[in-house]
Amino acid sequence: MRLLFVGASVVGTLMLCQSAAADINHVLTYGVGNSSCGQWLELRKSHSEYVMSSWLSGYVTGASAYNSGKMAATDTDGLVADADQFCRAHPLDPFLDAAAIVVLHLQQAGRSHP
Image 1: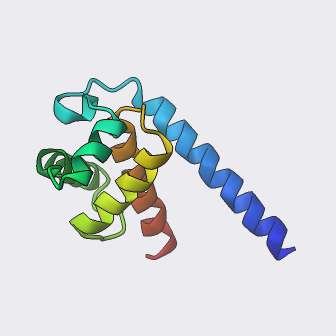
Image 2: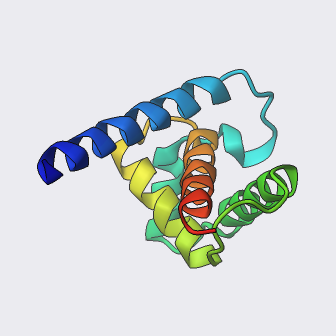
């Protein structure tokens, strides 16, 4: 029974992630959000991701303000780690998609830990 619950949770999360990425395609994007996840990963290798991580921090801050702060708290390292994970799996996707997934994860964590 526990395995069934875990499996259903994983499938549900994957479906939400795909839905969030699909919804984000209708957003007019400015700045480095138009860059690819592959570009993010290359910059991370040389520790030159400051501009993109600043953009990510601003995106998450804006989402938090829009959602009345109903998101889990983290630090920049947490944002970057989550973006890294998404981008390693989706190097051709726009960095905006990684930012949207980071926000989705923070929203989900905020709902599960009031």
